[in-house]
Image 1: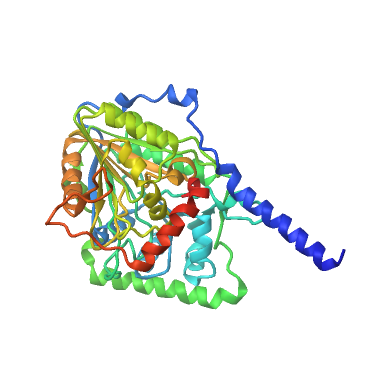
Image 2: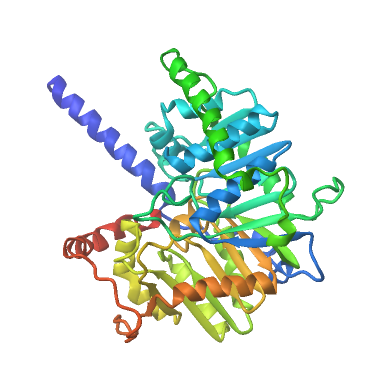
Length: 477
């Protein structure tokens, strides 16, 4: 046999190994263990009296960037920024200018980014070397894919939150680039949502009632995972001059920001005035390892929703259900008087693979009994929120798809607060007013006030193909 044939055979075997290694470990969705399920008590999400944490919903992209700058400016000891995706751009420049200024004044800064997206969008950029090489600034990637270990292509870190000292936490669905932050992406921004949490007892070192401490403990454990590695801490010789120039530019840009928006750079800000009272805020999350996961977040949310007395409303960008998730939705519908879910219409959504699966399986979703609404806005919605009755609001990074349920790390915050529930209800209602209800026949119920966004012909043609093809590996979507 010729050498060329041997090479071809070896390459084919290696290709099969890569495909099998990337797909098979995640092909069979797990259930939660009896040990874990026995500890889940939906009543634990409820508190009495006034909790130490106050909260506010951050709805617009401009607010989201302003709040980040404001929080970072207030930091005295430590900043944690965890995000699925950072991409160079105006908002990234603003955030890293503020972070570098904090490091300059002695604050410890830790940034964690998903390894796949960090590698694709951050590698080789002098701006990130200018930050990561600072003695007070550390950057890590979670699970950098390795072709020799193809299962590392999955198991992404989807968490998104910012923590400042023991005082402030911002969490939700936003990544760190212009599509989600600021007003520079004016043509096609994303609708999203976050919750700002203010620990009123932050000056009392002995008081650890705030949910912030749970999240900090979670982050510290994640930071030490074997799958996480330092990046940008050593500057390559070829980039030293550009890195020094980037550091100078960031410091200059920080001063420009302070001159242009002095209100964001005040020594202190009255967070009491802009936040609302809560009874309790709870933190739930998936396991942090990189392999297929028990569905901790979905299980806890399912149990919470099933005990609702008057109604549940889910807002999720995508809906990709497993067999167990379909059953869970049916159980919620049977238990709850009013059960609704809002997703992007496929003409509006920005996730082609999730939309393809939705086209194929929308009928199965309707069969669960949920009242299904499709958002018809001018931009895609990326927020992940749940309303339970008139006193629970849930906000975080978790999509109602199989990737968020069984594969990725995810974080969600369950907020027991009539005020926050009311505020979230109003924000969801504004988007609900731009949604159309899907009838049991798959057609929209007539609503003259909401025109249906039309799917372009080429995209419709592609969905006709991909909606079938993607069923082969839908558990990764």
